[in-house]
Amino acid sequence: MPELLLALDQGTTSSRAIVFRPDGAILSLVQAEHAQVFPRPGWVEHDPEAIWGTQHGVANRALAAAGATAADVAAIGIANQRETVVLWERATGRPVANAIVWQDRRTADVCQRLRASGVEPMVRERTGLVLDPYFSATKLAWLLDNTPGARARAERGELAFGTIDSFLLWRLTGGAVHATDVTNASRTLLLDARTGCWDDDLLALFGVPRAVLPEVRASSDRFGETLPELLGGRVPVTGILGDQQAACFGQACFEPGMVKNTYGTGSFLLMNTGAEPRASANRLLTTVAWGIGAARTYALEGSIFVTGAAVQWLRDELGIVRTAAETEALAGSVPDTGGVYMVPAFVGLGAPYWDSEARGALVGLTRGTGRAHIARAALEAACYQTRDVVDAMQADAGAPLRDLRADGGMAANDLLLRMQADVLGIPVHRPAVTETTALGAACLAGIGAGVYRGIGEVAGRWRAAATFEPRMEESRRAELYAGWRQAVARSRLRSL
Image 1: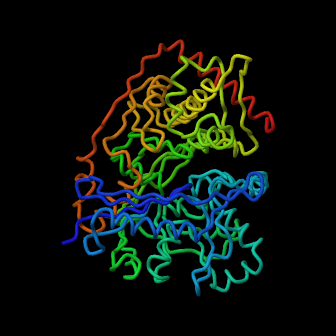
Image 2: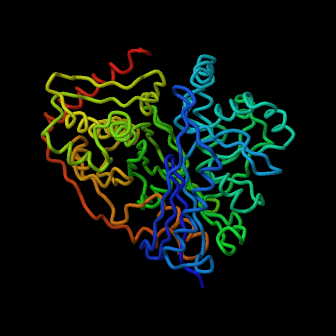
Image 3: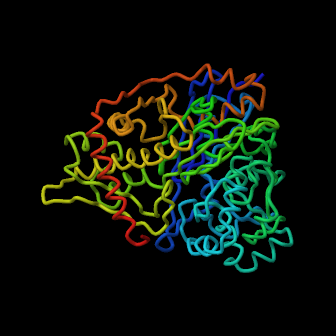
């Protein structure tokens, strides 16, 4: 019987494929970047064909690197950048426009008008989300209204909408399956989070025809099989999750109160809240963590738009570092930032502020400020933004967090995790398998394919490779965080 698991991890800046053994060991990892398209300030797009091409390519290369064939793979699991919108022709599979990326802010005015009309309480109650251009609904409506003929074609059933998972699944199955999982559907502003079904009132509010929507399924489901010519044989797709939910699953956050943070392009904290959705009083999101069979697990989420992207900005736009990895040594060459704070509100601020008008700021610059201070401020910004969300999460939960499980590309940075432990005042754990997003997708696919008997078998494999304990005195922690809050206030002057 085949027992390998192939994870397709389609992210904001790259497509990756990882082949796992059933014990979680990685046999191969292949990654390919895809281009970012910035047509106007605040607009972010991707070419869906580039996403498909890179994802298909790395899947085949990963199998070859593992010395495996399609016959050795029990199942495929997909983890994907969430909220990004693709619209394509059912007849040909061709996209009718570039994908609009989750970071895109072009519909901020639409969201503002909807808030002013008083509908946000209803939207929050049904979806668990806030009215923000981050989510899919207003992006999809924009494509329907601004792509010639798209709305009429969609209403006739000629076009298909999907987040990236749906588009990949359509291509993998040769157009045989138009579906999504409940976690990705819960990020669209169109799904009733309690029922797991598309909501007619929300469809009418955002102007989305039902004919364009994918079928919503559990995260662990037999979605379909790949065309044999794509990977050299038919392979079932039995797991799909949004990337942050996949990381939560890969971090084995299976008990209520457990929290993970993924440090990637942005950062995303998820707290398992159990079998019932919990409303947030502190502007966090209520989201579906995963669905297995008829059962759904929910989470509170804090979405931070820019963390790793701030390091990319230092590299690509300012030339402060040549590679992102250099940031750790550079930032570690100074004991502190010299009073400098970076607020990387390049596309506004996410949770708990939800301020699309905020803009990036460097605060506290002096003549003595150097490259190292700015690099350290970029890393500290990830820690302070995480503190913002953790404070809100603790208030919603009514209990302090015991610890934090960290993953994502930036989690390889020891200095970052030491600073994060100091800023939060709790231990921060880095897992033995840091590819938690791909691991979560693979594990869920393994449950769907019968490789694992259930969640308990997956939970027993999680191990911490390193733990970072807080060392900072509480008075110093409070002083530094107060400075951060002042810097954030300055970045929000446009909207306050």
